[in-house]
Image (cartoon, rainbow, N blue to C red; front, side, top):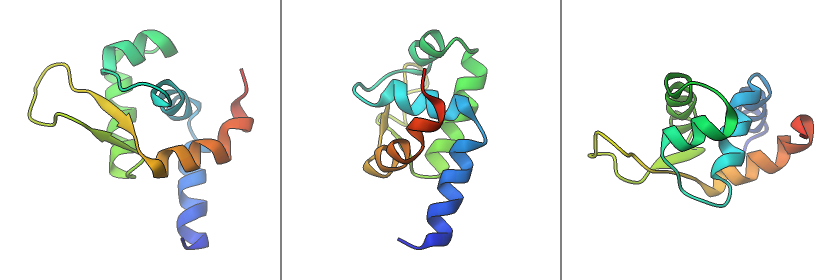
Length: 92
């Protein structure tokens, strides 16, 4: 993995505590956006935007893309890797 890509991913996460919270929420269980929204205390619209950004960065994947409702998301191995790199920055 290139250092430039590594820094880009870390920067993406460190710029938004909520993105990190979304990854933490998915760390041990696949979830739908509304459940993530309740867990992190943010609107479903915002969570959907976070998920879109994380998906574009290949940090999460949608498991049932064709379903218009109840889309389940899962953190990828790449997402787990970067979550572990930035986790200490946002300790609860």
